[in-house]
Length: 148
Image 1 (cartoon, rainbow, N blue to C red):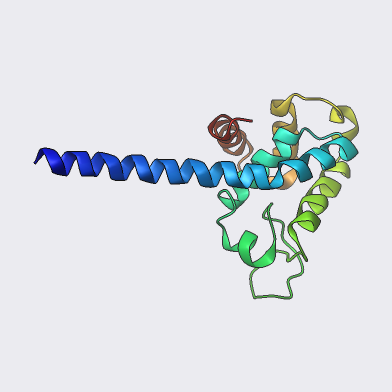
Image 2: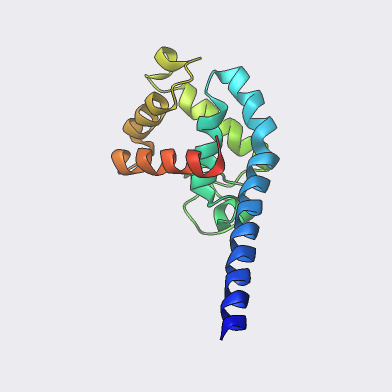
């Protein structure tokens, strides 16, 4: 029985290690792109990455894998019948999100601010989320989880 518990514990440790590794992989893969866009648009890297991470489940969603859509954006799709927009690559998806944000009323007021809570509230309240309070809370948890 003791060997069973040890094996079970090892399986849990391995599972969580792989999950953390996948999370770090997504962040590491897109951090430079998010940083470049942050410098260009004045949106914090942590805001861009945490929204992308949450919307894609750390890069595991079908919208991300099939459509290169990292932000759950809706629109024209030439790949399948989903309502999500398709992008030629991940960079186009990240840029489209930053361009969308830059066209919102709150943008000029927050541009350059590093206060992620203000960004989350503003983005959610501008129609990006149907449940702004829950969405903001989830994003704060994601930021802590992935170390942003």
